[in-house]
Image (cartoon, rainbow, N blue to C red; front, side, top):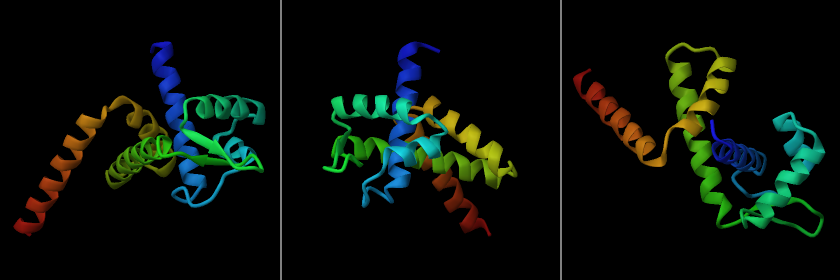
Length: 134
């Protein structure tokens, strides 16, 4: 895996964590909460927050809490949606929660937006056919 791919995954993981903690971006998030959720040190998260701030994907409140920006919010939602989709699919197939969570995280990075939309449409179309045939 290239350094650029790993960097993209890291950005995606941080955006997803902020999105989850912020309750769909309605609350500002503390760096310590991000660190706790992701299992990273506060110093590592602070470094990532600086990078996301420079990229314009987050902003900081006066008390140094994190909010997703108009640039970061759609990216965070997209990563979260992919993760939720893949985790639900895996669990529906009988995969245990922990394994589904781990594998969904890897899958969310491996599938581009176009393929993901086509896969969702395919699954939705199949579900519609299954409902009609019942």
